[in-house]
Image 1 (cartoon, rainbow over the protein chains, first blue to last red):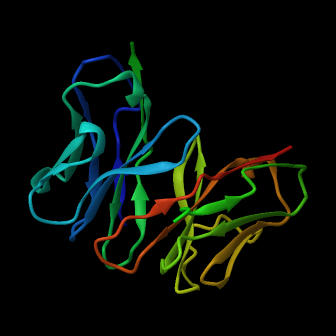
Image 2 (spheres, one colour):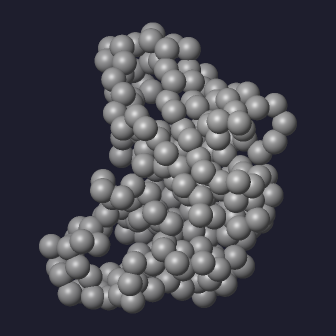
Image 3 (cartoon, chains in turn orange, yellow):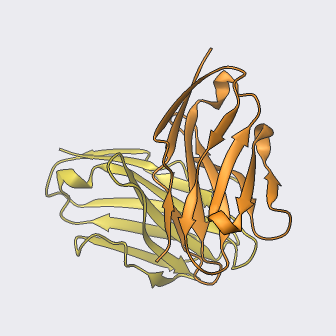
Length: 113
Length: 114
């Protein structure tokens, strides 16, 4: 069975700091990888996704993620965070054959102005 | 498109009552998913449908939970009888057929069982 680990449960940063949120998955086959964001009181929105090709994926709002197959990782990065990035971030993996998404437990990001 | 629509947005009920949550997926989407989000367990997939047919309900906690999709534009998640531990936010999501497609989430229903 697939599983996703997000080791950082709560991250607190100052504005303009650089961000990296960890995501590791366990699954031996081909996977699709996603990062979703949930702003306070809102529903999940897609930040970026990886299916194949260039392992460095650019998303919305200046976010990017790098797929490192040998490490089973898909870490999310942003060079300079803003207060509006305060949200919860979820990494997810999907077996493309089964269509089922498995989410990590999420990382709460708090940006201090 | 209006996106995935869920109703009600908030539901407060008493233990033992029946609760019905509703979802309208994005038009043309073939897959519909029901998730539950709690502080303790995070986001859990409860069940998903493909072309109105339930494909995987292994995440449904117990027999008190049931889900239906009578047509391509409507699905319900029912809890009968409800219990306080069912308190959570329930999300519905939909996506196009298999392939390079993401799931689009609805705004969720916040359920509180007293």
